[in-house]
Image (cartoon, rainbow, N blue to C red; front, side, top):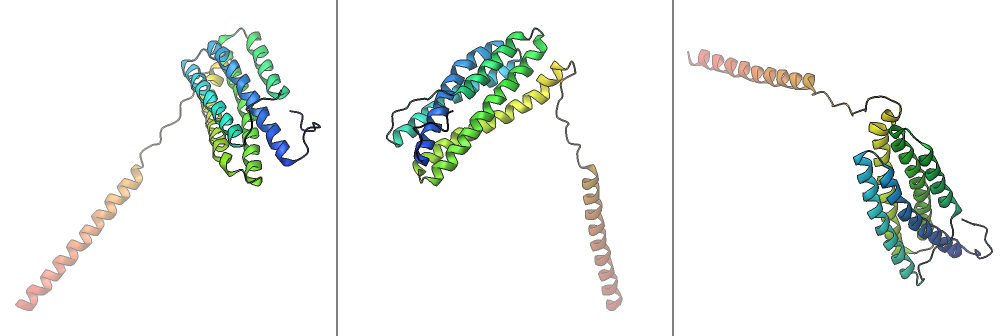
Length: 214
């Protein structure tokens, strides 16, 4: 993204240039995901990439809605950053012979892409708010939210399966919380003690009543 291009003279120009940048990036990601799906070995990772492909297409549609609301024709501008990230990920995945390591490499590449998108959408949301472009903020925020959610899911997959497998270890599963036995016992004792106390008070009251009656 050439931020110091001669065509950028104002904040509005900067916003539009960045919008065109992410529009181009999303199209490149849409093209790259099918190959990543084909290389993934874990079924969960394949499904994750497939879902993100659907989300990417939806994000492109929202970006086109943003262009329309701004009275502009949707168009992209070359983004060397995203091209470089995708090219590097393809090279690394192509060099790995051990299938146990491929998924870890693919997740790392996907997260590099996600982080780029998160920074772009975060910036666009902030700039749209500053420029008073309220009609497009919600569309950009939805894309940002989806990218952040995808990044979190990739982290979980890496920690649970891909990274341990690549390192030759067993998969890590989240530990289950032990039942709070101590708390329940304490509660029962407290309840029992309270009931006993009431019973004692009741019996004392009855005894007093008998003595008076006598």
